[in-house]
Image (cartoon, rainbow, N blue to C red; front, side, top):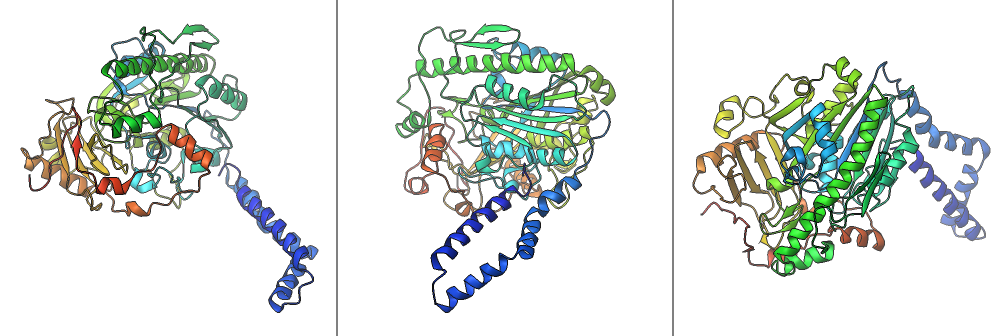
Amino acid sequence: MNDPGSRRLVWALGLGVAVLFAYALFQDSRRPIVRAGLGAVRFLARPTVALACLALALLPRAMVPLTWNEAPDEAPSIVFVLLDSVRLDDVGWGGSERPTTPRLDALARRGVAFHQAVSQAPWTKPSVATLLTGLTPSHHGATGRFSALAEGHRTLAEAFTSAGWRTFAASSNPNVTRLFGFDQGFTGFYERVGAPAEELIEEARKALHPGEPSERPFFLYLHLNDAHYPYDPPAVSRTATGELKVRGRFNRSGRYPLLDGATETAFRTGGGSSFSAEDVEAMRLAYDEEILYLDDQVGALVERLLAVRDDVLVVIVSDHGEEFLEHGDLGHGHSLYDELVRVPLQVAWSDGLGERLRLTPGTHGGQVRSMDLTPTLLEIAGIPGPLGSPPPMGESLLPLLRGEGRRATAVPPTEAADEIGLGAEDRLAFSETDYLGSPLSGPPGPLRGLRTPRAKLVISDPWFEPTAGRTWLFDLAADPGERVNLASRRPALVETMLRTLEASPWLVQRDLRGITEVQLSDEQREGLAALGYVGDDLDALLHTAPSFAPGAVPWVTDGD
C-alpha cells in the first residue's frame, strides 16, 4: 500500500462514527442485548482504552517506516515506461514501414533493443501485473475483467519503496488504477483515465523532479494509454524541444473511424461486416500517429533525463499488441497470436550508470519474456528477493545487457531444446488469457501458449470443460504469420511441447468461473466498457456454434 495503515484507519473512523450514531439512537433502549452493546461502547470510550485502540490502529504506520532502508550509494533511478497496445512491428526499430518512432529508434541505438520479447498476456491487467510482480497471470490472479491484483504479492513499487527509493506512478488506463490494486507500494499514484502522455509526464515531473539532482533515487512508472483505441490522435505533440504535427501525418484520407467497446462488439457479433477494409486501414494509420505522439513525448523526457542525470536506467515496453484483421479480428485480449504477444522492449541508460554496471549497447535477437523485467530491475538496484511472497518467475536480463548471452535455467529439459527450436540465446516463453475469445474465431475459450522462436503451441485451458481439448501448432520459421495449424500433421512436436509446458510451473489449474471481482459503480463499469473491458458471456459461448472469420485459424481436437 502506498500509505501503510491508511485503509485500516479509514475503516476504523467509519466504524467509530457508525457506533456513535447507533449509541445516540438506541441509548434509551431497555432490551438486554442492546444494553450490553451500549455498555461495551461506554467501556471503549474510556480515555485509556480509547488511546490503546488508537495506538493499535496506528501501529502499521509506525512500524512500516522502521523497515525502510536507505538506498545504497550510487543507486540507480529507474524509469519504467509502459506504452499500452503498441505492437512490435509498428515501432521503427521493430520493422515499421513508417517513421513512427524516430526518437525511440535513436535511444535503441544507444541502448539495447530486444527483438523477440514476449508478453505473458494479450491485454493490460494481467500483463501489467506480471511486469510489476514477475509472476505469470495464473500465479498473480489479476486475470478477470473486474478482478484485482491481490495485496499478498510484492510489487516492484513495494520493493523499491521499502529499500529507500522515492516511488511514483501515473496511469491513464482504467485497469491500472487504485480500484484494481495497482497503487500498492507507490508513495504517489496519479490516475486519470484517458489523460494524454503529456499530462502524466508533467505529473511525474511535479512529483519527483526527475530532471534535477536528488539525494534519493526514484522509481517512476508511467502507463501511457494513448495508442489504445479508439485511434483518435491529437493534432500535435508539444514538448520542450518544439511542436510536432501528428494528426494527418500518416492518415491523409481525412477519415478517422473510431473503434471503441461498442463498435468492437458490433464488429464481432456482426461477423466483421461493420468496418470496411478501408476503415481498418485508416485505423491502422491513426494508430501509428498515436505511436508517433508517444515517441515524441517519451523521447523528449528520456533524452533530457539522460542528458542531465548520471544515474538513470530507462525501460520502455508494451503490455500487448493490437490486431488489425491479421486473424479476422480487431483489438486485443482474444488470442495469443504474435501481433498481440510479441512486444517492443528496449533499455537505455545514463553513460555513467552504464560504465558502473558494465552495460553494453546492442541488439538482442534471442527470445525473452516480460516477466524477466522484475528480477532485472531488482538485481540492477541491488534489492534482494521478496520475503513471505512468491519470488519472480522470470530471470534477470542483466547478463544480456552486458552482452553475456545466457538462456534462462528453469525450463525446458536440455534434451528437448533443439526439437522445439530453443536456441542458446533464447528463453522459453509462456502466455495466457482467461478471455473466452471472440465470435470471429470460434470463440476458442481461455488459452495457454508456449513459444520458442521456431514454434508455438496454443491449447485451450485443459480444465475449462466447455472448450478443453483445442490445439494449435505453428511453425514460426516457415509460417511467421501463423496461418496454418499443424497440430494434426505434427503430433510428435505437439506432444513434446505439451510435455515441456506441463513440466513448467506455468500451467495452473484454477476455477475460472470463481474469479473474485471487485465491486464497481455504474460509472466505473461504463468507463471500462467504453474501452472494451466488459465481462464474457459464458452462456453465449456454450450455445453458439463455432464460426471463423476470414483469417481466423480453426483449432484441432484430439479426434481430428
